[in-house]
Image (cartoon, rainbow, N blue to C red; front, side, top):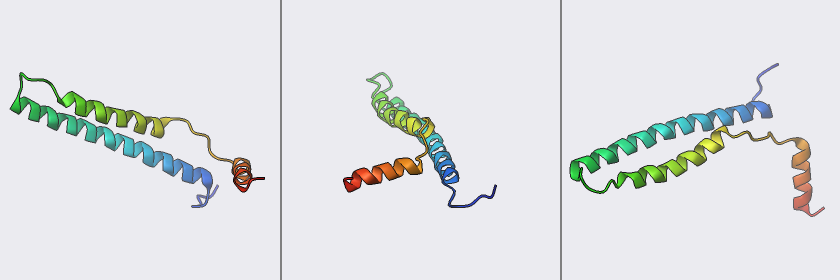
Length: 92
């Protein structure tokens, strides 16, 4: 089987791999930002309110959705599904 750039399954695989790589990169960014804000908190008010939790929580919400998008099983669109949707959009 030849690897052609127009193969829909190959394109879907490339897209999936890119999303997974972007998710892993986001996790590293999340860890780095969490570490930085924790160090800032520790240097400024170590006995005070632990406000970095809000940054971690907010970025965690993004991580959940990015992970869901990268690792959830999504069906590959078929020609029949595309034709059906086109008919709906045309009003047929």
